[in-house]
Image (cartoon, rainbow over all chains, first blue to last red; front, side, top):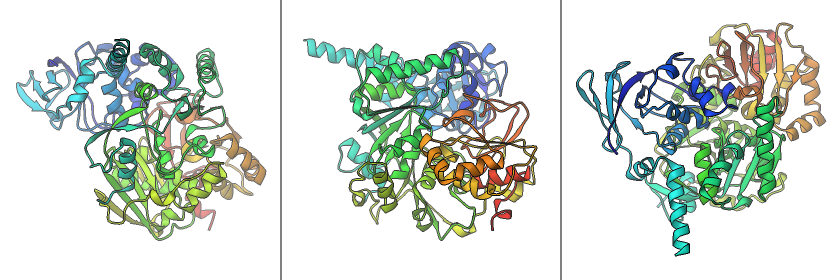
Length: 170
Length: 420
């Protein structure tokens, strides 16, 4: 998987699922939920974020609910990766299932709002191009990289079921 | 080699003799619980893409509790999709508007010690109270489970939290969990297995243990186990099921947890968490006498029969302060019926409580919300900004005792001032 490059959107600790996917919008399609993603923290986030950008945060990113729209909204807005000191356990799995690389990175303090950064999920290499510094994140294990490379859990399992059908038919 | 309860369950589900914390295993799922929000409306389209049905419909339980009752066209449609899914599949159980999934699942005898269970909701650790390894996952991952019957897991470490001695009056499981969130933080559980032990835990009834396990979600654990015992077995039998071999599902005496925390139950006082995090917990007196507009007793965390009884013991012969709305949403229809039959419900109503549907309701901010700028004290699990649907609301968390006492005073109040 090649490195992703984009602008950093930097937030603090405890960015929870009620901020990422507010409950009152949960009955609506993902496009609507995504418009309100992080609005209680940064009202302009959904409008400003572009495909390839990276969300950077502190401790406990995605703590709270199992609602996977918290991860799906970021994916829908084109976020290419998330870097945080730590994650809520369910959010972490949800993000990977949507093919969104979420990396544990202790060096997030060296990334400022709007910095241009690149992230390589396979090696954990993070490059802050604006500041010219190389940072490190924990790389993801191979079986999760394979799932992300397929586009997430659904296409990954689609491949598996198609292979099973082909084998059964052969 | 000695194993913890969590390791024993995971090893069995993974078809292994032993497992080591940190290794990745694939586990066979014994039961999958889904609800109306993350369930059929999200998993059915994915199963269609896969071109497969449910791996084993008898191991799937569906419970409608989030969009109950339906309030508009979108939520009515969600209800229809949910009922249609139940009609098309011979599920192990379908409970529509019978109460909140985490309470209904064990109430109907679906859980027993040693099971490996996934739930499509973050409060799924509640099942850990029965000595089952139960944890929450998202809807896409659930679709994968429903199609394959399997899920990957990083074998958890065990974090033991021991409570010695005896809890004092008006000090309950909710206070334990708020205290632990304050002490260890919302990531104290590190997505590992939290295991509640000690004589103070063993003395708790099942629904109180469920509150401990339930709020393991706020403590950041993947599940929250309690040791299965005669209390567990009796609850399961009363639910019409067989508890199985309780003795088999115990940690080995020489098993080594990765962390061990020990607390003195008698030293704990009623706790309240200030906005906007359960980790902002402190003894109730530390918050000052904050004036409240709404007192809310609801959710899987805080409106089971045992919780309604706590509130009633405070409210008996008292009236809610005229400036406060006391809202009570009993967690299941059966618990509400039991509360009605024994007189508990009448005490709440006589004190001035307004009853809400047996559903998640305001807790998830999905159905019914707090008004702007109100200050609320609630028995729910989580007080994140906007949690109850309104970002300007200030939500304090406390036990049903503390919520009820605060409703009477009109201010946040130590329930021991009224019951001692």
